Image (cartoon, rainbow, N blue to C red; front, side, top):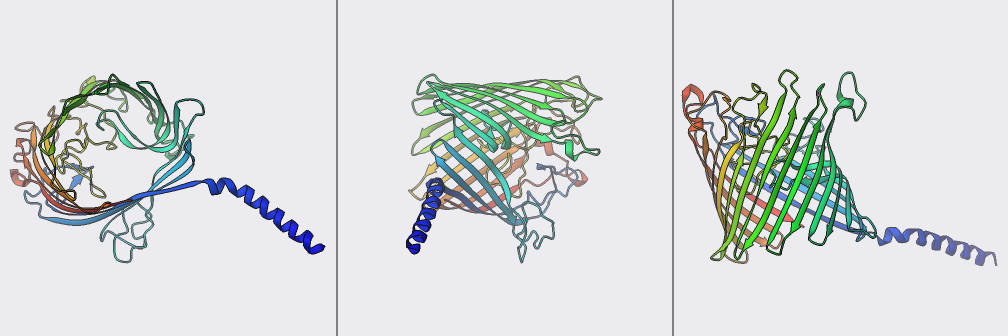
Length: 448
């Protein structure tokens, strides 16, 4: 009889454990990720780079050849409770072969590729809650999350902490959000309370499908920078659109910026800047032809006028990748080494005028390729490192071939060459012209 009671007690306890474990057992686990190996031979990264910009001023006209190999792994885990609720986490591990090991460079990102490895190197890209509000069309994302502007990345595109609410209803899609870029207070000496010296962004975005072929939208971003004794507030207001005309699709945007730039109390400026773009793609033969044009305003006399026409992009947390450039503009495949002739759309307050053409060609089910050409010039010569013969930065020609070894493993061979413009005439050491930049690269991309 005692044995039966003990058995019943054990069964009851097991039933309780099973009942409490049901929610955990019902959790759906998703794993995604990628691995990329990037190797390059070039004379571009052999030249000293300042904050990502190619600056050959005063350097040897022939910087020599540099070779490097970098690797990146991204790991995403999604804990999905149901179709309306999930937690998204995303991590990254980067290194360049031979950089350092055994913590010789401290606990920092983008390293650990030297012999022995054993470096602490795990970056957190995203950790956010993604859920739908019951009985409403509203979706909410809370936490560190990826965000891209509605203007092809010329303003901001990065992981950032904040809250974004979106809703789709009828032909409309609306978003409103708040993001905090910086909170400097606790890092100051003496310390300031958290939340006292911050840089924040407010987002309002609206899209409307006029028809199946025509879509229009508008977005407003307000950046409030309260990290210094004075407060800078500027506004970015723009419209965008896309329309299909048979085999041709045309898209673009127009942005205007206004507000006050007061980070330098000695020279407080009013902002009046703009940017515009138009692009098109069309089926031509068995491939697709592409073209893009970009204009970003610059300021010819930075810091010396009451009004600035320099477009305000968010640090280097953005990039215009639609031109498919590798050296002239930032490379979409760059990793631990990321630099370009035009590294940011602000372009050291000079702005930029650029145009691109390209063609993508699928040769077989496994082999495809693309060829691209692009040019760039500064919108305003700011006198940076001396006035130049012209504003023309240069022309890039590049090509790429992709071969699918498996459905999720692709080998890529690329080459790029930049013919420098007169903007760089005589800027190298001893008044010489710098050598034209080039790069040959090979990649292995695995995704799952």
